[in-house]
Image (spheres, rainbow, N blue to C red):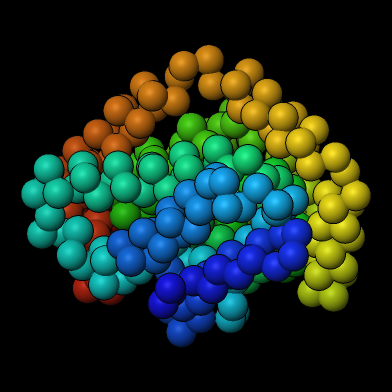
Length: 260
C-alpha cells in the first residue's frame, strides 16, 4: 500500500495514514487502501488479532479532503459525485463494522471527513492541542457522509452546533462530547494507547468480538442501509449545486466565495 502503512503484529494490527506531506488528506487511493485494510481485518486470516490501532504520520492526523481531489470534484458529474461519495461512505461503514476494537490516536488537525474516522473508533486518544472542525459548510457543502457515524458518538446538540457553524473546536470539547476519551501530551497519549492495547490483549478475544457485534446490532436496527442511500445522495447534490461549485472554486482559487 502506498498511502497507508498496514501492519499485522502477533496479536494486533496497526493502520497508519502515511501522506505526511499532505497532512494525510483523503483522496480516492487512500480511501481505497483504508477500505481494503479494514476489510482484511474482518476476514478469517485476521482472527488471531485482538485490536487495531489507527494513527497517522506527520504534523496532523488528517486535514480532510485532498486539494487535488477537491479540484477534480468541481468537474464531476452528479453520477460521478454519487459513486465517489458512496465509496467514502463504504470506507466508514467497513471500518465501523470491524470486529476488533479500534483504538484511534489523533493529533494536529482533524478536519472534515477525518471526523468520520475518529467516529468509527471505539476508543480515541488525542493530543491536547488537537483542533477539530466540520469544515464542509465553509465550502458550501454538507458533512453528509460522516453524519450518521458522528451522531452515534456525539450528542446531537453539540454535533448540530459544530456541523452548522463550521467552527474549530478543541480537544477538550471533543472529550466532553464523547468523540474523544483521553487527552494528554504526545508521550502520555502514546502510553495511554499502549496501555489500552495491553488491556485488550488480556481480555477474552471471542467475548470482545461478540460484545462489539452486539453493540453494532443494537445500534443499527436496519438504519444504516437507509443512511448509505441518503447521505451520498445529499453530498452529490451539493457538490454539483451552484453554491457547492462556487464554494469549492473559491477555496481552490484562494478567494472569498460570492456569498461573503
